[in-house]
Amino acid sequence: MESPAYVLEFEKPLRELVKQLDELRQRSIETNVDLAPEIQAIERKIESTRREIYSNLTPWQKVQIARHPKRPYALDYVEAVCTGFQEFHGDRQFNDDRAIIGGTAFFNGDAVMIIVQQKGRDPKERIIRNFGMPQPEGYRKALRLARLAEKFRLPLFTFIDTPGAFPGVESEARHVSEAIAVNLREFAMLRTPSISVVVGEGGSGGALGIGVTDRVLMFENSYYSVITPEGCAAILWKDGAAAPKAAEALKVSADHLERLGVANEVIPEPPGGAHNDPAQAAGALKYALQKHLNDLRALDLDQLVNARYERYRHLGVYEEAGASRS
Image (cartoon, rainbow, N blue to C red; front, top):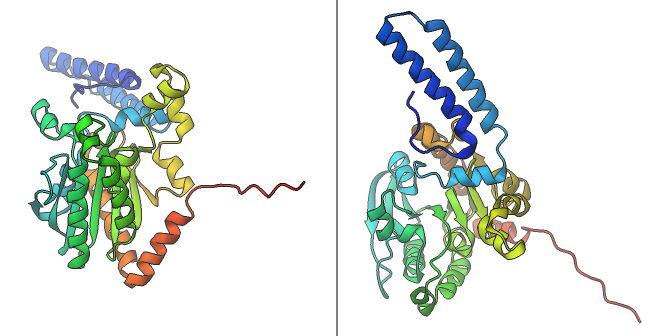
């Protein structure tokens, strides 16, 4: 087991144990002394420490894992669970936004439409992908592909991983809020099965622009929120350092959102996060997608749209104040 290059603050006790394990193994080789009992003891300690850490994560710690630079991104999952992905480009109006990628693929032998948000793995790709922050043309491209899916009766899978839509002047000039609002309306009325998966960050309207679907799945260590914890902390407490408190108050984590009905299912991750075993995470995703797709295909199109309407109509809790009497 190699020591990870990127270690979160709460993972440091685990890193120290891994370091001790590496040193013991090296000493055993150099001195030709059998240290198997000591090595096995540390391996057991590593395993128990990992279970203890990752079974008691706070919402803020889950946000940190969702942003881990080694975490599988949307295209990694597409490659793992689908075959024959063919990318389509452009919104037919302005440009091809590289933060949103879409096209057709085969999932367990069936043709599907895929729309993903991609952050970029290295500095060059991050710039090309605009750090996963789509602009208006990205949402218009997504809508074009969603309508193609409806036309050809293809199930639609969307993979969400964005800190939010791009807030720059040029994005606002091309009406990013209008593009997202149109997608909210049109995705809600699509006459084809649709499933979205939050694989990392689900940031505000940037995520909702491709997230109004029949089913919403979330990886265990992903988050979905109207605002980043740092942004919330800056507004409410005037201090970005209050982000952990904000993450708790916002109920951003997958387990909270499943209880609130926002997420339909939480997809389990390997101990330590999806980046520790991407193949296992992809396997769990593939199983969940097929299960929910089977359920949705059992409905005719009118039932599908009506069920989607009812789902979003009943999200949240509100009270109506009675008319005051004089």
